[in-house]
Each structure stands twice: as structure tokens, then as C-alpha cells.
Length: 130
Image (cartoon, rainbow, N blue to C red; front, side, top):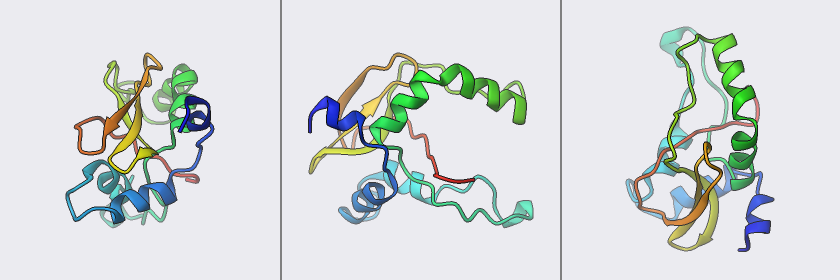
């Protein structure tokens, strides 16, 4: 998969499901955590029916390019301490490069790399609708 093709990957749900299905429970925890995420639950009085998943590399690139606007929205709709993690650490994408590798990107530097699917990185769950 070339960089240009990877940046065109705006999907996420199906690839995340495929990553989870490819291993035994606990094999690829990033995909498992993202797909089981709930922004709120029945204890909050609302059921989260969104399909959360790992973002495609293209989506992570959009987050990187729009991080100031996203941060502003987080602070406006929630509270001023709600922040995107300010780190050069990389977040998992659902864009797979090989059976054992996927792309990861820092949403603060824009740097991306291939990583082993079992490497420990950050997870940013996303959904198509809220």
C-alpha cells in the first residue's frame, strides 16, 4: 500500500472488524477497544448506538489538519479541560499494510509509520454519525 493510497482511506468500520476477527481475543487490543467504545451508556440514561472503530489513515490526516478546530469544538461543547492528547505519540489507524502491520500517525506532527499490530500506541475511536 503506498502513502497516497493510504491517505485515501477514509473507511474504518469494516477494516477494524477485520482486524478484530483476524486474531484471538486480546491479540489486537487497539481494534477491540475502539470497536467496543461507548461515548455514554445506559447508566447515563442514553444508549450509544454508534458504531465506533479505528479511523482510516485519511481520517487521522484530517484530524491532524483540523486539530485546532477540533480542539475549539471540544472546549465549546464540553469543557475547557477537554483536550486532544498533546503528544507526538502515534494513534492507530485501521489502514492495514500487511497481515501483521497497520499505519499509525501522530495527530500533532502528521508523521505516520507502519507499525506491528501488537505495538502499544494510542487509540482514537471515531464514528460516522453522532
